Length: 368
Image (spheres, rainbow, N blue to C red):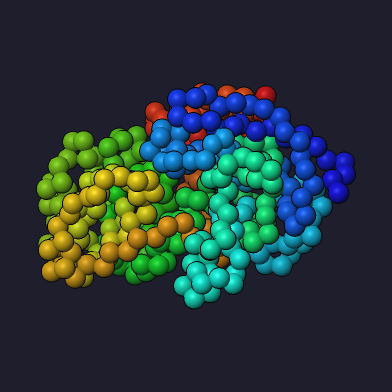
């Protein structure tokens, strides 16, 4: 039973496109096999922007927000992914999805993020036991089947909040397609995923990590996070970028291309930029869009490996935490959170996030 803890939570309800968020109070219900978490910080992910803009459907009303860090707020019988007890006051981060560990996708395919009974935080209708299911709220209730990890004291909330989506997805994708020291790479998109990809690839031994975007400010930020070359797609043509990349790679083209922009032009551009035997990883097409035409002849004759990856295996979250802890003095991860808004100003926060003048906007539900 809940004892000596808050029994009322504040949530920001999303009712649909062009409708302001509704800030309301709901009772905190004692649910078996859950972990009640007090939300410390939640960041606005690109997929949240897709939902709010209508590019991606959602069952409304719902509580969005899935890049979250929080503190255990009540006793629980659940444990962390490494078997440690979860105690009140423990700072934690958790997997974006739940998994049963027994179905076809969890066992045979080793894709727990595609579990047959998967639950995805910040993506479901707000009702009954799913009332506290998103990060844009004062509290969230984690379900059994969630991979939960303790956050080392050295890691700040601002460094940890985005990793259970953005960094987890990037690391999972790059582990899937594999990385090799000494290779060259191009990253399409200098948002949070692209910036994480740049510094991760550099730490994997890539001497050349180029990045493409239309946002000049984000390209400057990318340089601080390992990008060796930046190209503004508004002022540089695809042909010019291709020529520059070939110049960097002795005429071959790059070994690895990583799409994290969701731009329709990204896939056909990267097929062009890749070397023979190159690998293409796509992570950013997380919303429905029209079919994208690209040069299939090049895909075949250049022997390119095209790999799509969605979300991440829950164990990758531990790798993401370790990456932040080991490299936080080399890269200013906390500075990627450009501004923090209180929950009461979530509508203003989304207006700001849509401007894309900074990489991540955050919500602190307990700020005044």
